[in-house]
Amino acid sequence: MFGIGVVEGFFGPEWSWKSRHQFCESLRVHGGEFYLYAPKRDRSLRKNWKHHHADEIWGEIKNLSTTCRQSEIAFGIGLSPYEIHLDWNQYTKTLLRDKIERVHELDIKFLGLLLDDMRGALDLADRQVEIVEYVRDMTRTPIVFCPTYYSDDPLLDKVFGQRPDDYLEKIGNLSNDIHIFWTGSQVISRSISDAELDTIAQILKRKPFIWDNYFANDGPRQCQFLKLKPLEGRTRNALQKSIGWAFNLMNQPSLSEILFAGSIDVLRKGANPKESFHRVAARLASPQFELVLEKHGPALVELGLDKIGEDRKKEVFASLDGSRFSQEISDWLNGKYVVGEECLTD
Image (cartoon, rainbow, N blue to C red; front, side, top):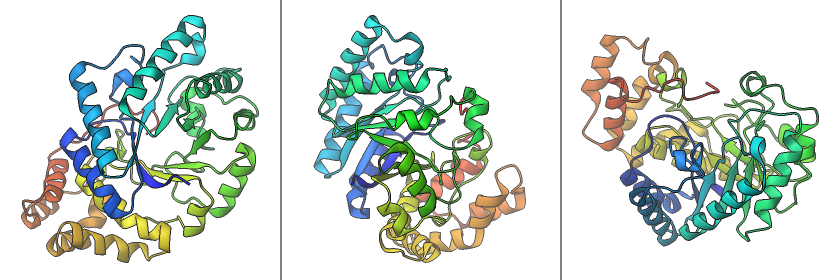
């Protein structure tokens, strides 16, 4: 198993490099085992994948890889060669090979090959299997593949076109050493049950690698909420029925650290979700901050930025301290985390 870790795979404002280092340095302490760098705004991994990163950014990614190695965290890169299936020829194969060789300079422990957020096609599954196997043949690095239709959610068909018949069954023909991401029955799944994991494992012919969007708040609607809540609808058994569990967290890195650390014992030990969440908030931030979440958390989670009201905002502002956790709530209340239409599945 990969264990439990983090994928920075959201749209909207990215984590700062300082926040990334801070998060990766704390991951092992919280019980995390891997970090996948795959922010949607890194165009050199997505729509501009044929072009290399600027030297400055490449240096930052190398430094982050070093931090992960020193922190005993498996570092991975999420490469998303945009709509490569529509232009799959010898020239594109050469470019992809060059890109993979370049990525290996980062001392990655696994490679995310992410073919989501792309238009479908009738021969999509066959073509994607060919692409993934092509990459597999050129690297010994473990591959985690994200299909275009990574959930049963009909929203994906609405946005990317009707999925081909037997799409996932054909994806299941991939070599059995390739892992496959799955988000559950929905893009943002309220629960991920043992039964549905058994079903998808039969279809994919392997345990799924869970990409969990439970806390994600990266779209025009979702950014209106801070998902500061306990992890519900997941069990210790569900973890055992997966090959790995990757939390795609919020655009707010410090608050996301609380969410991640509070979720570990829920998945690993079957801890009470609410008790674990509040215990971690008090430990990582402060008892005062935990009281803020106790009092105002439901409004941040359920009402949203547009409906929270000026009086409640003032009350929240007055209760915050100068910590990095409080600063992110303050910035969110001031509209600094608004995300536009770039998120396709919100």
